Length: 440
Image (tube, rainbow, N blue to C red; front, side, top):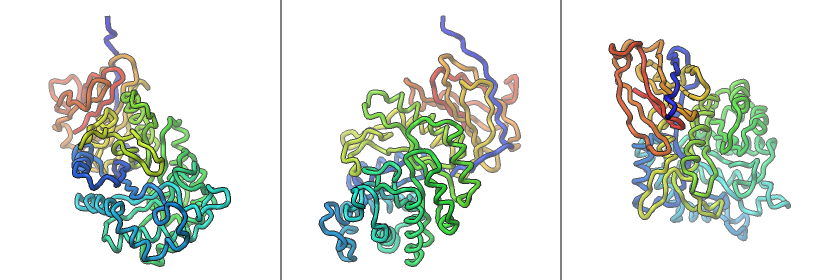
């Protein structure tokens, strides 16, 4: 006979809060914007998934003025750059960003991948010509802002320099801080000082680059977001190290985002596994104090910086359409129900097998409880909510669930604090290895 499961009390204290949430979203390749069904994709990501943050990489590599390295310094001439920024590839990027602007979203512009080879040192990997590299980045930001009249306030100038090619050029931490400061000075001189940087976009979750950035207080004032990447399972202590260092340093005024997260499985045969771990890593980041997270990747596509087809997308690329994968539904449990401006609140569970986080509006009139049952048996979850708004006890709460065999299904709707209940709270049966959301 199947095990009947266990009963677990979960206490949600809306009066004890942590970080404010800035939103959730996706990394997205604008190369396919010319396809009519790409607009439908963005509509789905915004209106169904709940994405409010978009990290847009237009070219996929940072060698866009000189892909072969044969033109040299002449590739940075205004005439040549104008031809590049008016090319079909660039126009697709501008078009996607313009559409996002029309939807009320200011995406953040980023670059990644290899740079022109003449900018590299003799080893063919390390960035050496930082001045002309910054000139190239400045031209992109200036064109997007002043020629295309696009609305954005964040720019990511370097990607995973701790890993190097093909993700980006190799740049040591001290040099990274120097180059970032150089770029800030150039942007200020060109009237682009209101565009804040997203740094350090590391591939490894540690403070190596952040410590160098924090030495320069002037530079830190130009950093809008401390961005990190995560594709592995890190400990709570590792997340705490990042959070505590940022909040205790000159970087304290920057937002803390996980600008890439997910799983790097490329078999295509373990979708539930990928969905499960992507969701778990999202909870890790939120529990660790991160204020936003952007999944890699929006949809399956050919990525120029890897020069390969990737299936990291939360949407599967089909014939003239995109189909949500299991990981889409798993992440929707948070993205759709926890909105920008909400705060994480205190939640305690009687068992580590039922992992739960809580979020609420600043006025405590709405809340969401998200989590996962990592046990092999069902859990009868009894939720006690305290320190709520006087309007909250009459609120309807929806229970949505994703599992190996369910895709974000609406399980039930219950009135919080219903008089027929034996206590003032909520009850829900959480099946084994499932992901759930209780939200107003």
